[in-house]
Length: 142
Length: 142
DNA sequence: TATTGTTATACTCTATAACTATA
DNA sequence: TATAGTTATAGAGTATAACAATA
Image (cartoon, rainbow over all chains, first blue to last red; front, side):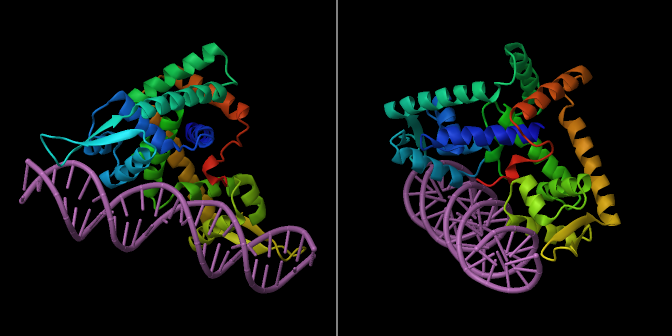
């Protein structure tokens, strides 16, 4: 049921994002860049557990939208330092709002007490499984 | 967290299946053919919500393993009636055992009471979302 | 030599549409 | 004409490996 509901929730979230021209992987990268500004591309790849070559594509997309900047690090000119632009910060707020609305609507069938109990149990599992909060396993290389 | 854990559970289950040369989509089809013997291919496609052309590939694979038979229906010779072979029934028992072991190991971090509470909450969500029990949304066409 | 970011390429999965055989 | 099953094909997403610039 967990797998089934997780996939269903993912599809519903993707649909909500799609209305705004977005897709889940980009939303995840935006979340990371918002919560940890100043990462470089290699670090993003490490946190997400995804190949660096895949990160390039995500960042190309976000940069084309004007949501991030890639700045050459002066002390090590191989490195790109990543930052959200003001437009990017704005975009993140929209994504966060979509996520919140999605969570609420997905759990409509539960009472508030049940919702909070579910959150508690899932938190326990996330911790027990050693998952990084907010990082979807779908980024992981096989 | 639901999406995250669902994906993680799916990956863990895939890994467990892989040790026996299996993949999740085939396990799901086996489950369906076991619980509803005598379906035809179109009906399988309908239940799973997947294109009939995709079902063909799954069944080709299962037939090559000797786990299912496709029998032409006498009253309508366009139709293939699907059945598990004895080897297929045996294979299903293995898959069910893997699934059970997987569920247990995935929820190791919870007490028995928490596990049953989680089951209860997830059941509610499955019902509220109108999901077909045992059918992974990943089969669904976009 | 090693590392960061990038590009090229090949592979898997999937949906769509065309096809056949039956009805 | 319509339907069940099949095949062909094209697109998306991904990983791997090769590459250029810098350390």
